[in-house]
Length: 137
Image (cartoon, rainbow, N blue to C red):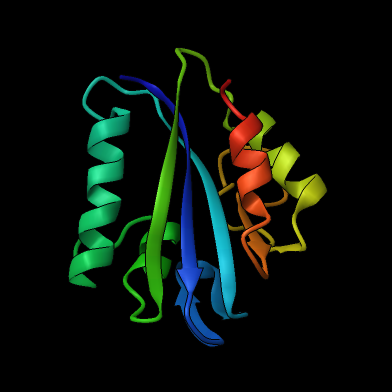
């Protein structure tokens, strides 16, 4: 299955994390929604999300993307993953929805291959649920 996804994580306490070339970033306690896509033949939704779960559980692994640095931090837990089956790249459309309703975003995170300002969005509580319920319906 190919498509886009929203990876919902919880930051258990305020933390500073070095995110590759973005440098050290301060993350507030709360929930972070990361918007991504998996449109390759081998990089499908199942493989991509399985990789993220493994990185988060083991807190180590092959660190390549911004989200990888985030997921291996001991204060970050994966809460849920919303998968949206699609043959087209819709992650930026989803990202724009989150940008409008989130409390904050991490500038430049996960969007080096597009024109979005971010692909990681902050919520102090579980208000992200309202958005997830309306995406991919």
